Amino acid sequence: MDTESIKLDVHVTSWFRTPLSGFLSSVIISRDREFEEFIIDGHDDSVTSLGSYRDPSRGPDPLIFLNFQNFEPNYVYQLLQSQLHDHVLSEQIAGQILVEAQRLRSSELPQQPLFMMVSVKLTQKGYTFGTCNSATSTTDLDQESEEDKSET
View 1 (spheres, rainbow, N blue to C red):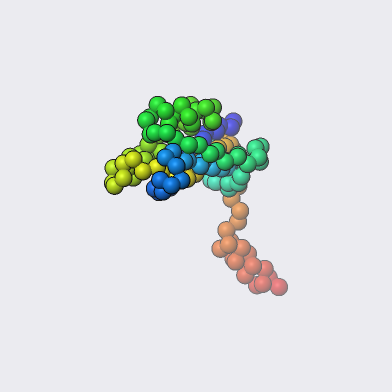
View 2: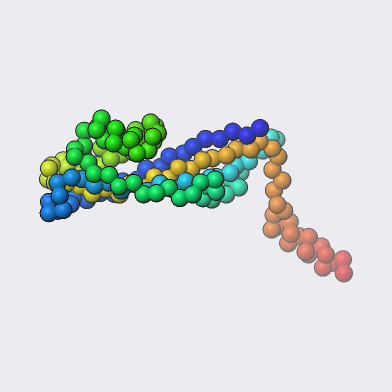
């Protein structure tokens, strides 16, 4: 029996833009998709990671370039939704963008345009139920090696 879940990590880096570059705030979004495999041992319910790698079922996602007129929550969400076509992803990214915009704008220059880099990592986790046959430990190998030497 297999089961899957998805983990979402959103990281936003931002700074002020000079007014000479325009009065719109700019956001660039990069998306990275990974797949992580786990096996759940049927004997003791322990979970062992088999590793993670770039999701082979999809090519790289293109960068998304957006210009924001303001940081009103509904406006930010609608702009993201029009590009991502994913309600949950749009909500999560909008939330992080709004937190970062509020943090920067409350500090000094509330009307200064911002530039933001948003990094999104979607990790699909695949779980397989079965039995784990752990490889022989190095201690066991050392003991076997010594036993072989004593027999010869």
